[in-house]
Length: 190
Image 1 (cartoon, rainbow, N blue to C red):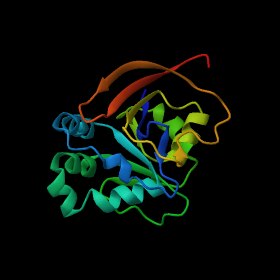
Image 2: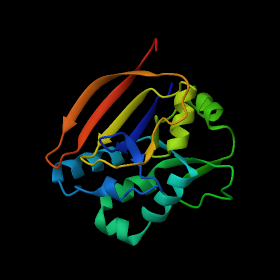
Image 3: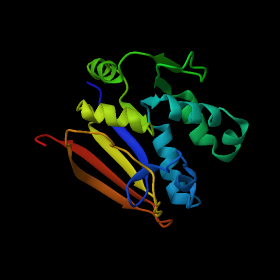
Image 4: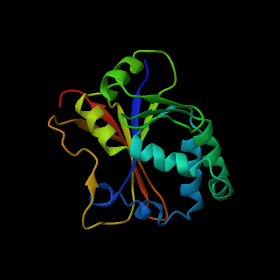
């Protein structure tokens, strides 16, 4: 059975995006070689990447570009080679290599997908998708990168959820640039 992991960059006060979807803060302080090695290792891990439309369009416009390949070749190669699924009711087609466009209900599709054999599933960004999958009880683990940044306003990751979810911290890792990685596992009972 496949597991579903959510990977997100978060501000210290819990936002995954600025009020207008701004993510510039997420790329600040990214010059630490140790953190870059962590990012490259994550990008090379086998898994099927899941996206909502907005995050997919942002990623699909960047990672196949010559600039992405020049600035971060290992991550670009991993992202471009990965199996990808984008959930969208409005997208006409998915042109990024290796992407399947799914117009079905994400929670039902992921519930079925988790029961099959294959690579584990990883959601990158995609706040609305994360909230829907969390509400459906489908998230198994989270890997949050807390950036040493505070925003005055923004979008929270689990906005709109009605059912509380319990997690336990399984590990943490602090980097010299101030980034803090927190790994969490879903706890039954909450």
